[in-house]
Image (cartoon, rainbow, N blue to C red):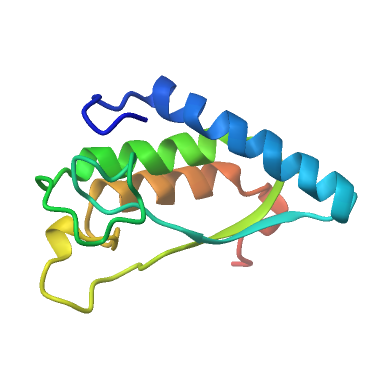
Length: 130
């Protein structure tokens, strides 16, 4: 995604398609049938967060919606249950002073979206016992 482009869910999902193909191909070559687990998925909540998710020192303006859209695109790209067993969110809560522009999702729109997505994705058998 170009840095100066406004991210849309469609553009962000399209950006993941090549990576999904690469990961699926590598899995079939190296470990056929094994589940896929991402050990780190995170986006800073800044305007360029989807284009440069690694840039933790970005001076771009804060933008919680870009962070939410980036997580949404990731989840919607990996929709088939056999593809993705789990993923770990990079930084649930902030330990520093700049939470509004950093990776944590706690208290931001990305947290609400991911919580709803996880609830919808869980099979009924995974629900906690009363």
